[in-house]
Length: 215
Ligand SMILES: [Zn+2]
Image 1 (cartoon, helix red, strand yellow):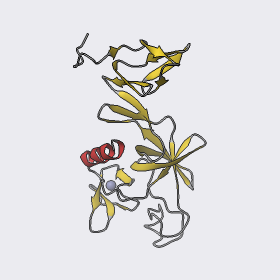
Image 2 (spheres, helix red, strand yellow):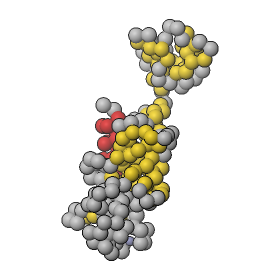
Image 3 (cartoon, helix red, strand yellow):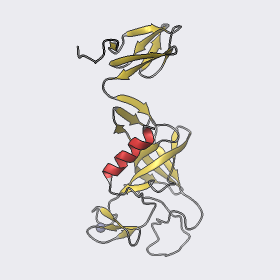
Image 4 (cartoon, protein in one colour):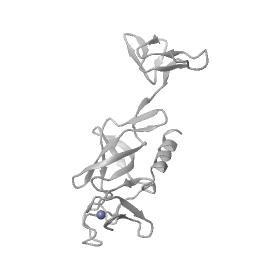
């Protein structure tokens, strides 16, 4: 057995009984069965004010919820709605997982996020504009949960596309400060959209997620 530090610390294995349900309110990494509270993971027990939880020695799983930032890939565009497959991501000892997929509802007014597929051929047109395209990796915030789908919001400088490939040739797109657009590193194709201030900066994305999720 691995030593866990102080002698007062109680280390438990998954399935180990922590107490009775009438004694404790079962919290993080615990479950109840037959009136008892059990540890769901390997880790150290924490008890306070009648609540018991297990601080995982390894990774703890947390579910993504309202108000949290998420990372995902745009997988389909069905007109007004973009579907986003949400990726789990790790921050410290926590693995954040999304139990459902996400969607972004496009804004209807003109001059919204402004990444129309038709923008290059019809400048200033009123065709439906899309903040991002299929294949883009986006950083978004869960605004609410609707019919088991996370409704995502792209407001705020950090939110938006964080990685994209060229729709013409598949090469990496780079952010161009001057034009505030994405420019293909190979063929110079230009795409507009709601681009994150963290575009192409994975370390800054990671520290942004850490800051948001560990306050
Ligand atoms: Zn290209």
